[in-house]
Length: 190
Image (tube, rainbow, N blue to C red; front, top):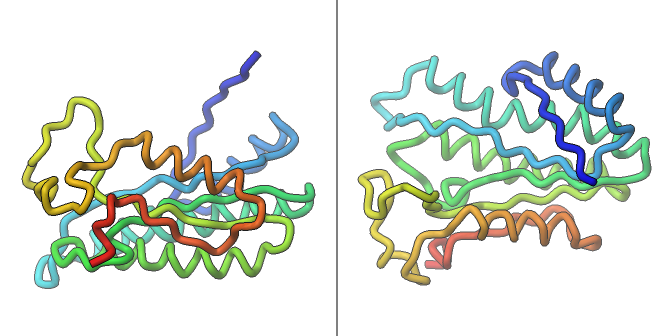
């Protein structure tokens, strides 16, 4: 059988993440995989970024993953191992000039991934996936927020399944740590 439980926490609040880690540990006794996937994608060109947009974006996209990794990673290390996969973005590898706080936060995830990989080694592996343009079921292709699919070398948008496969690979790859794996159809190669 499979047991599925949901837990709720505001990732921008470290005290809630610490409490979440405690609840999960009490329920299951261990965590094998943490995927830091929470994010906000707020617009913000250089002349438009407000302190509120900056703070909210970095609180959710960067502070949250750090404190989640701190709370869970410590317990993983004490339990003898585990894996953390952070979700970065194409925006961490190429600048999104109309989403400056987002790109900065996701570039921070790239460095955070490398730092945590060193800090939590050898028992905890830490990697990241950097999705490109992803389309979800029911979403229209060619929406203003997405580049035309023909500008991507693979000539299509990615799917949630493409990202999930990369996360599964990194969760299973026992000799891989500190890696950022682009899942973008080749968009960041040129």
